[in-house]
Every structure is written in structure tokens, then in C-alpha cells.
Length: 369
Ligand SMILES: *Cc1c(COP(=O)(O)O)cnc(C)c1O
Image (cartoon, rainbow, N blue to C red):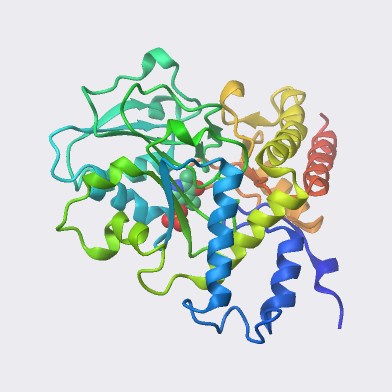
């Protein structure tokens, strides 16, 4: 049988996205029988000792990688980041007089706010829509309400390709962050956050599991009339196992954590790796005399999703088809922004980014650049 590995392309999908080859190979090796267990991870009980160990190690590795202190709980839930658009305001806003403040830096924040409005008063503290979400606010532009229930930000806007370099100062209000598309891609100071949520399928694993990190004192805000499965306390009390968790997705998340820890030098190491990859592409943009026009303002650019346009749609089509024939796939930008989007998450190898860079240089030359 031909080895699958040699047929792999460079996959720039925005999510679900590329996984580390080591992780795929480990999952493949374990799939028929977990060592010492004799059954597949797909077959064992979520209450079995083998799964106890997987869950425990995954949560411990997340805690160590991110430096999460005793002040915060970490839980794993289902429903994707999109369910968090509802769970956050259900638990932290419902029944309160204060408003929840949202800083809108792109499509995902705009989607999140729709759900918050169903739960209570919402205040838009800043909105970058006027310039197509090509930048983040300057500190002086953020207008918070009085004593907000929380302030919500999106650390990396996956569609526009803008990323906070560090979290905004929101005073004593709890900062809530959708970290879905840069989770585990760099160190963050968890102590600055009231709540962090991230689906796994961009940087941290596969679809089906979402990580929520919540400051313990905020748990007291949830009302007793919440549906059991939408109440964060249910997941904290039951160690992320109130019912059957997505066992395979938790297992893959655990493998990715171990890969970050043992092969990539933790979050500081992966952050250097990610910044170096992003620089390879942004340098091409900057030296292209406007041929490759970046969507995000240079000081707000994402290390995860590199978004740019070519002179016209015909050129973009030719660029994409040439890329695909070189094994560089899933580079089409989101329909709302257009152009090209190269998602270069944790697991995208440097070789993939170099191959894309080379194609960008070649394509521009072929157009007389
Ligand atoms: C992908 C993404 C989401 C949506 O995640 P689902 O798990 O599909 O609900 C939300 N926010 C951001 C920033 C994302 O990148």
C-alpha cells in the first residue's frame, strides 16, 4: 500500500485545518487498539480508566501550557465556539441590569453579538465595520459602558485576518475572549481574562470539542433556571463529563497538547515558529508594490490568517488554480472579504509556507512584477 503521507498536500484551510503529522500518525497507530487497553479510543467508555487518564492528562497539559492558575477552571464542552456565543451571555448576562460590551473587529464578533442580544442589553464599544474590519481600535477609541457585565473581544478574526497583539485594558470588567483561531498559538496571560473559549478545530485539534477557561468567581453569576447542559457549573462540577463527552476529539486535543509541549517548545516556541512563518508571507506582500494588497493594516496583521487581494478576480482565479496544481490548497478567501486567505496555524509546516511564498513570487514575476 502506498504511504498516505507522501500524498499529503499543503492544506491552508481555515478550519477544520491541518494537524501535525505526528498527531495523525499517533492517532492512526492507536486507532485499532490503544496500547495496554486493546480497544480503540473510538470504542471505550468515557468512564473507563483509560479515558480517565486521557482526560486528566489533557486538562493538566492545557493548564501547564497556558499557565492557568487556581483562579480559573478549565472545562471541555460541545457545540463549537458558536454555542459559546450563547452560553457566555446566558451565564454572565441573563437577568443583570448591566450591559455586555462587545468590541467588534470582524465577522465572528459580529456573529457573537447577535446571540448576546437575546440575553440582555448589549453595548458596542467599538466597531471596525467602517473600514471593512481591517484594523483594531486604538486604546482611546474603545467606549465602554458603565460597569459592563463583561467585555467581549475576538483575539483573532479568522476571516479578516486581524489579531490583537495583546489584550485591551478593560479595567475591572471581566474580559471574555473568543480565542478560537489563535488558541495555543502563543502565550497569553490567562489571569487577565474572565473567560476564554476556543473551538479546537483551528489550532488545537478536531471539531467536536471546545475549551472554556473561566474565572471561578464568575461561576456564581449563573442562574438556577438555566438548562443543565448550558450552565458552566454543570461542567465544572462533573469534571467535563456530565454526559458523554466527544471522546475522540478530547484524545486528539491531548495529542496536540503533547506535541506542543514535547516537540515545539511549548507556547513560546510555537509563537516564534508562527511569527516566522507569517513574516515569510507578509514580506512578499510588502515587497510586491501593491500587487498583493493585504486586507489587514500592517500593525494589526494576524500570524494565523494572511488575507490579501490580487489586482483583479481573474488574477486571483489563476493564482488559486496554479497554487492547487502545486499542492497548495484551500487558499480562497472567505466570500465576504474575497481574495486569498492563507491559514497558517500551528501545524502548518514551514515548508508549506515557503512553497506558497515561492509560488507568490513566481506568479508575480509571470505578470511582469
Ligand atoms: C471558527 C470560528 C468560530 C466558529 O466555530 P464553530 O466551532 O464552528 O462554532 C468562532 N469564532 C472564531 C474566531 C472562529 O475562528
